[in-house]
Image (tube, rainbow over all chains, first blue to last red; front, side, top):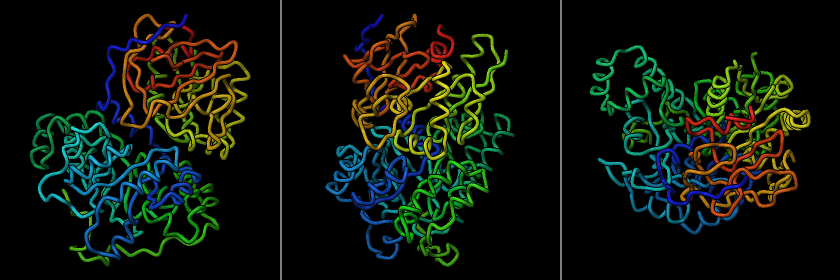
Length: 302
Length: 195
């Protein structure tokens, strides 16, 4: 027997829907693209979503100046080109850029340190939006502050545009290590930890009970090869953002497909060897250790 | 009796399905071992299968690339149960309505991808599902709709005049995500034929 729907109650933009969207991205690769041709290549390579940008982080780094949200027209073209979700970056604290992205129909907003921060003290109140947000974090306190503000997904704040995975590893180890510490604590120790790390106590207790972040946790920043992507999965990430690593590579198609395949086969070294063979050179990059502290993007918006 | 369940795990919300399968099998007094399927060779050991939500383009590409696709076709041909949700429904369809998805033709329906809009249009509601006593909390995320339904396909639920859940034995497929809430009754229905 077929019955019709109860239409009286229909809710949008709830935590369940925002976090649910992020869950659908798990095990996937989200690729930075700057135009529709790149978006097409990313979708064909097996990306689960694309991040629409004006320039990839490596070029933003080289160019200097103020980095802002991409042209809405360019983002619309990318939305029209692909069937997978399209994400967009707003500056930290720039509520209006974020509203514009939501109005265009962007599926997830990245409040990103890769762009020049608009507000030194406050992030966007993400709970006010229907679109879900992803935010970067270097440690658990930062991650939980972003979740408290309404983020539905957390990503590491690896040093963007470097092609050096070092900092993404560092941040993921920070987050995982802190969660292990919390799991071993009693209630009052967790409360003290929350105060010390400026994290909301309720989320600290929830994280400790779950033994993981209460939202999906991706890796981002400096991932440039299939082996890098596999390494971040090994460190317990739910999926991977690749910025300059795809279109900064010698052969973006081969590199894109190989990174997607590597995420699926991260725990099989023999398959990884096949996947990483003959795909051309990765992006040149710049070692994190060679970048002066004041030029690092990850310290923006803590 | 202990069952072996498989969750297609090349991409998507795998852990959520594993949890729902564990709840459903426990309710039916059975033990289960849930296996995540990323490579060929595991599906033939499974008594029941779930194809999760995720991105249908990415899932179908990896199913074919890893050689899992023909094993899933054999599983259904052998009459073993499969629950396919959202992207899983698209991959299971006779025609995904989009050349970017190479669907498996496990059920006699056609689908329209993203028929309810983009993420800002995603919604949750309570849905009457045939065979369930209570309205089911249904979460639609960039959801597809079922466009054409073949003979012998039973419509289980509609939303706003669109078909959003079907049974084409041994497959149950939904446009929404029963794995995202604690209510495992759609999993009960798919794997045990009753709640």
